[in-house]
Length: 502
Image (tube, rainbow, N blue to C red; front, side, top):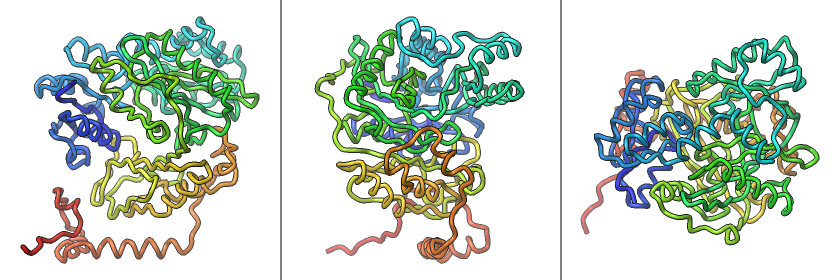
């Protein structure tokens, strides 16, 4: 087993990996940009090294700096989390060449499934149902135009080198094709360092269902059931759950076996997610492989009892999977809400700034995977995800009620967040009945605005309570706008005093 792991990421996912390392007795090494110097992952890790300026290109995407930091620090492995370099085959190859273990798929499999066009070619040859679309990269605009006509509008523009909704555009006519391609390519280049895009037929109002899969280095592959990810905004998942309300036991079995076959024909190892679209007739199509840990992995952990991050580490260390497909079962129901620093009343624009007060929800069956704290300055440079709120209960109805209560108990002051929006999503009748598709947000929350009411008074009261927690000197400084950021373990403890010796 590894003695030290470098975590090439930030925020809540870096914190999640640190906790896994701590439980396994592995030293965690955090890397951070200058903007993240006071980040929670930096404070939680056993060791931390600054790797560059705030820009992701100069820090979290700087392969040379990250690999050199791993070498000089004695880290035997690098965990990339998700985003940044997690699905970059060149980074995996460079880790392999440097004698450092990349905690993820091998570079050959990563190159195959990470290139969505090549993956489509491979799956089609293996008899796996795919969405009609391009199986090659177009040379120019004229070729894209020809292919779009063949497929038939509407078409979906997708990035070849990554997922997460980056570079994705829906095009309904030929007039929209060029601007859609240009903006999609720009976004793909910024997110993945690769502007390559391709076209698929746009399937209207499907469900988005994915299967969590684990594969060791010895050909043993298991799936850990599905996750329903249909609640999406701009092709970005915001609410996930398992089991899916749409799947029958027979359909779950067929899709699970298909997911295992996808990894088998790809020569894949470690953790991954096979994504499908499920149409109105319950016909499913292979969408892509997300060759990394997913943001929504906790719902699978809560219903199966399997720690996916620890499984990743064990597979990367050369251990055989101890899990057998016939022994894996789901228990209960889990729901996750992603908490973003965005203003849902203002087109979901990012909302950077200082978190003046944070109260995490608690209670039976409530899990909070966070990467921020009271006093933390949310930077403008990265994805605005702050945390993930996950709940588990015996039934779906109970899980939805528990999530509603947890969101009511969740307070973040100082910046705008998606919490008010998520409350209404969870409370919506269509969601409660499990009748959701990828068009849910557009159909019911297109021009959503937060309702004004008594909650404004609650916010003011909580702000006053948060201010009351400050020392007199801090209150004066805050009122004058001259306070300086001081980051220490004592700041995170809240009120404390030295007790009298008895």
